[in-house]
Length: 258
Ligand SMILES: C[S@@+](CC[C@H](N)C(=O)[O-])C[C@H]1O[C@@H](n2cnc3c(N)ncnc32)[C@H](O)[C@@H]1O
Image 1 (tube, helix red, strand yellow):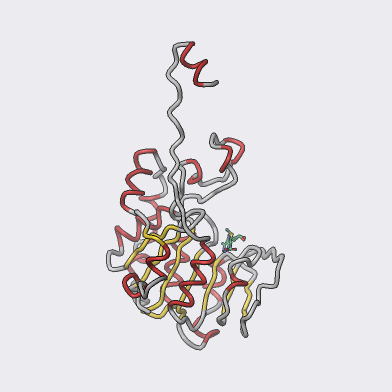
Image 2 (image 1 turned 90 degrees about the vertical axis):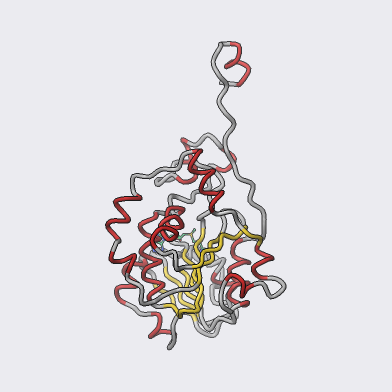
C-alpha cells in the first residue's frame, strides 16, 4: 500500500523506516590499520569467509572458519598463516593461539556467527589468550537498521529491500553485555562501513566474570529484541568516533595501548 492510498482510505501512513547514516572507510581497511598502528606481532580472525580481510594482513596469522570459501590467495605478504576449518568453539577447545604464535594474541578480529551467544563465547575465549595490551575488534555491532538485527536472516520478509541482504544478527547485545558486566574494558565504537567496528582494549586475560555468568547473561539477553526506541538508545550510547581519529595523528593511544 502506498502512502497516498493509506491517506485516502483513512489509514495512517506507515512511519518511514529508521536508518542510521554510517560513513567511513571499509571495515577491513580499518582492521588492517589497527594491526599496523599497534605494530602487532600477530593476528587472529574468527570468521574468514573468502579471506578478503585476512589477505590484507601482513603478520603471522590464524584464520578460523567452519567453511572457507576462498576466492583469492589469503596468504598475501604473510610469512606464516595457520588455517583451521572448524567452528570457533571447537578451535578454542582444541588449540591455543599462544602456543601457535609463541606469544599472546595482539589483535583479534571477531566476525564469525552473527548471534550474540557465539560472539560472547568468542570474546571470552579470545580475551583469555590475548596480551593485556592487545586489542579485540568486534564487527557488525553498529546495525544501521532495526531489521538487520534479526537472529535468523530472512531477506524475503524485510521491508527495506535495498539493504535486505545485510545481516548483523543480534551481536549488538555483546556491546551492551560488556558495558554492563565488564566496565573495566575500554569500548570504542568506530564509524566504518557497512556496520561499524568496536575496538576493545584494557583486556584482562585472567577475568572470569563473563564465563562465570555466561548462563545468567544468555538468559537475560536472549529474549531481548531491537525496537525503534532501543535502537535510538543504543546508538546514543554507542555514538561512533571517526576511524581517522583512531588511526591518524597518533590518536591510537587515546583508545588503546600501542
Ligand atoms: C561475515 S563472514 C566473515 C567475513 C570476513 N571476516 C571478512 O572480513 O572478509 C562470517 C563467516 O563466519 C563464519 N562462521 C559461521 N559460524 C562460525 C563459527 N561458529 N566459528 C567461526 N566462524 C563461523 C561463516 O562461515 C562466514 O564465513
